[in-house]
Image (cartoon, rainbow, N blue to C red):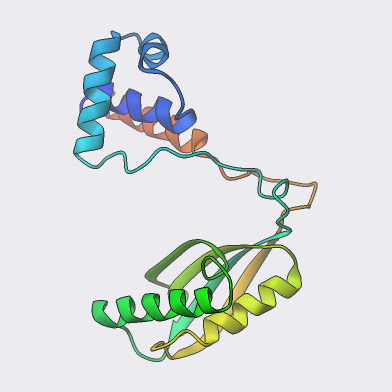
Length: 180
């Protein structure tokens, strides 16, 4: 990737609502160059979407759960799609828009687990319903579920969710690469 592309990505990670004119001023480039670069990054798939990071506590959520699942057998892509469809159908039947407030659900490997969910919950009772829901996902045989709960009302915070630090790191990495 070219240096200007790194700079555009970094600034957009810090603030995705920057206009191309303001972005150009920040990185020392022209607005047409920034517009072309942004469109190129979108077309090539480097930029998947523009979004914001909300204050989940202000929205009424009390807990964020990072939940790991261990499967009895790995699923193929057809089984995963069937499980998704069945889960959404079950959610609609129960009057929910979706299956809880899931931010992310992914397969992976580590710590002996095969998948992870990151979810938001109004309270501990909501989280317990979520754990029950996980254990009943159609077509999925789960042998173990473990969670790490984050109290969103805790006044002591180490580093809240943000992409600004990652953006700074990527620029430093690129500058280090240039020097070598």
